[in-house]
Image (cartoon, rainbow, N blue to C red; front, side):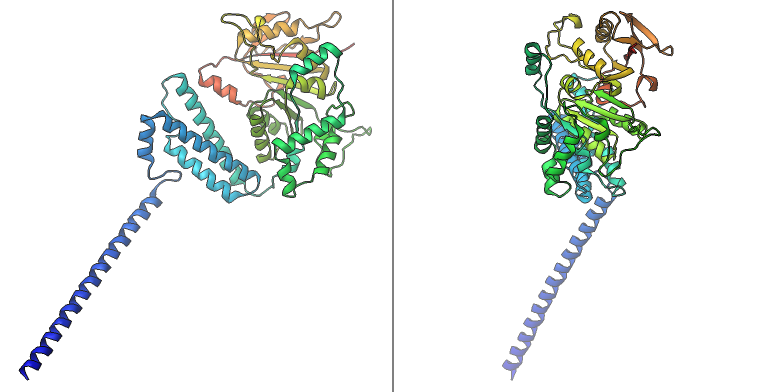
Amino acid sequence: FCCLFCCCFFNLLFCFVFLCFLLFCFCLLLVLCLLCFLLFLVFAAAILATPRGATSGCCSLQRRMCESPSEARGLDNEVALNLMVARVACLLGKRSVGDKALQCAEDAFVCGGGGGGGEGAGSQEDLFARLRRQELAREAGFLRQALDVGDAEPIDLAGGLGRLFAFTSRRGEALVAVAQKGPRRRRRPDVVAAVLAAAQRGFGLDECVRRGFTDEDAARAHYSHCFSKDARLKWSSVFRRQGEEEEEDDEGAAKQLPTKVEICSGSGDWVVAQAEADAGAANWVCAELRADRVHDILSKMLLKRIRNLCILAGDAAQIVSDHLAADSVTHICVNFPEPPQTTRNAECEEAESQLHLLTPAFFRSVHAVLVSKGLLTVWSDNLGYMRSLARTIGELREEGPTLFRCCAREEHTVEERICGVAVYRGVPGPDCGHATHATSYFDRFFEHGQLTERYFIVASKRAEK
């Protein structure tokens, strides 16, 4: 009996100890789970308390950027890449994708310190880096505004591409052809085929066709209708929306708004602002050589739903001489033109560049496409170059009288008068063809380098007797 009692007692004791051990393990596991849950709550609260656009690694990343400029450049590239994705998503109506990409860009931008650098004038590389970050911030703000607009008015991708005409640029061959054979003759079918192929190859027309926004035959018919038989653009067809009837005045003639042109538009900030200010009062046309800048202009035009703007991609000299009709433009504006290349301390008249745009031949082409008393305005920060252009414009003649007449602007100071053409100091106003004051990339670039003086020339096509 005693042996049996001892066995039962020890068995019960062992079971009790084992159960206590199990209970202890369970409590320990429960405590660990609670600790993990509390840590998770603290971490989540810290994430939610972080301001919009900030990330947890900002301080360490910003410290690394200060120590290594390559970190800053890499982050700027990340911002630019995400902004490109956001822009494409906005154009395609993918708002959630665009918002996510834009958020990534804003996160990386905040990590990089925003504007980057202080007010002190660092090296030239630092100046370019600060300007680039300012432009990236400007682009992010523009896309955020476009996303906030939402789907109030759908983006007309096919209509926007219908106002984009990309021409092949073979300026050297063209100059040789003019010298040997005289004026070039272009056929409408050839130009239409080239413009259509360029839109498909480089500007997304093929994707619009694939997505069902338009079809190739409709695009070809539209481009063909926009050109005359001698391959010159017809503004009434370019700016008429699909299915819209042509308006007529009281005498039965087709109504047409004035057409204004900007040469070398850059990324398009200035011309987009002008078209927006002139909506319903005038149509605007911009010419730009570089394809990446043409893409910038196209996206801004589409995201702002601007319908009175046409984009001409290619060499402006070839476009004006070959594809603009005579007496069809009321204003031509050239902002911050690129001076010709010269040797050190040489004048602009001694230019070495054979691809200089603002030559006497170009101004003769401008004279041909302007209406009677149409305006030509050139705006720049380079006084020496403006003197050279004033001399070039003032010496243009056609059997006696000059082709252009200087326009008096008494409210502006005359910096210098050359060959009867005044070089004014300041910013052109509405009477010079500038519908509103707006800054372009080049204007901001020169201001960033503390070059704030501006000069302009305004001349009108001399009225024919």
